[in-house]
Image (cartoon, rainbow, N blue to C red; front, side, top):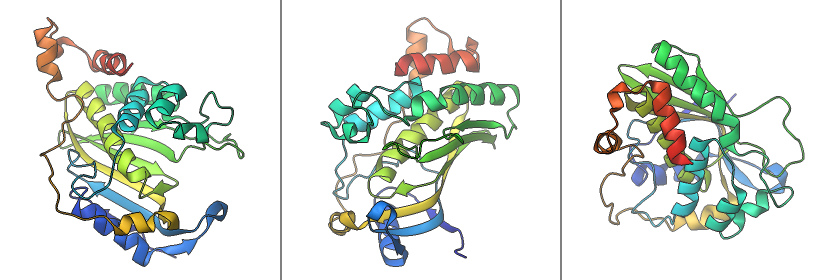
Length: 266
């Protein structure tokens, strides 16, 4: 039996490169759907620095249009294949079963759960019931877009909002680089709605893996390029903006604030 492996990410430069190297060196080889991977089972990746969740300064290119599109759609509770297809230059069409929509987008799946999580924690800040499920027991066995994420859950501890994600499958090269900044921004939005600071982010992956096809690109990563300072969160300065526009954020309920988050995302 493989023990749970804990990986602490202090940033997405040196720590991220070390994580990738660890998977390639220590991971077990298997080939789901005939594609070779190196895999760490039951990995727990954690960070307390959610402002440093995008890979920078290592030569890992990012498509920020995809990141922005997915993050906003998840917050808004919607799915727009046309937008993601535009942002990805058609790549997202490869995941559509019919060329017009996606089967497993997170936005429509988490919409009610996120609103419920805010409501639960507004009523009981110590609750352990603030969970948004993204997986059902009736998932298709033939779709090209089966959800990788099973759930998001939230807890307020020590005056901060901690978030935990459970994922069945996590691609450390493609998935981690987009999922971490997108999901921690979900965390920041829920935290703002509740009037608390975001805390620790924990991500449990049943399979944390690297595809053999990506190992060459990973070998070219190099730490040491410009970092450009901490990354802003979605709701930095939003209270000041509301005040400037004649809105008093202190008079908004958590439910009102979350509705504002959703409206902004749409």
